[in-house]
Length: 285
Image (tube, rainbow, N blue to C red; front, side, top):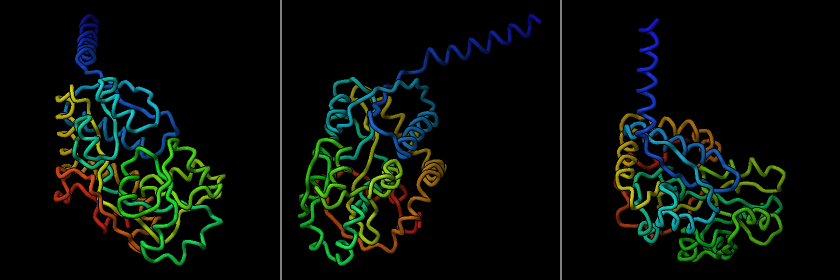
């Protein structure tokens, strides 16, 4: 009996030791409806640090859904990790973990449109035909600058949620959404007369990264190590396909007309030559 008690006490001691030595990691969590992509990112984060053998106790900090404001919180040490699309300016505010979490698909944009306007988009076969139409975007999103610099008309807005209502009311012509988030966004707004335009896609090179507080370089190193190990052992792709393979298949990416855009705000350090980190056209079809 005493041996059993001692064994249990030893196990409890080992468990408590792990808790004591776990690092508290403050993760920014936007105060909005969370989508499948958010579940995916949380799972990738937990798995990456586990793979790197970095014991972490996660503390989720509610933040306003304003990307630049959250990145400033990172630079001020109020949070330790956030995820965001990259730009040269953003990489000055925090440590970018240069492993593209969506394999570059954050820059593959289908058009969310009002169902009543579907016929207006059918004849569009060139960028010049689309450019005069008004694209809704967040005022602080890198996408806004990318679209504008490529000659597309953009209507910037502060409130993400309001843009869906503006589209319904005809206050914008389309809302470019990435192929990994558009279906989740529609699913929670199924009562709205919105649809995914069926034959066009905007495409520009970009990456969606974890960003880490500059005062936490050891956390950044562990996160990068874990993500790269997950790529090597196949775990990253397994989780990615679990969440997004069906979505990508339903969007018929291979049959869409692609309008290529330049991204002059993409840092030179973006690992575009590491093909294993990026989505390949024959995936998810």
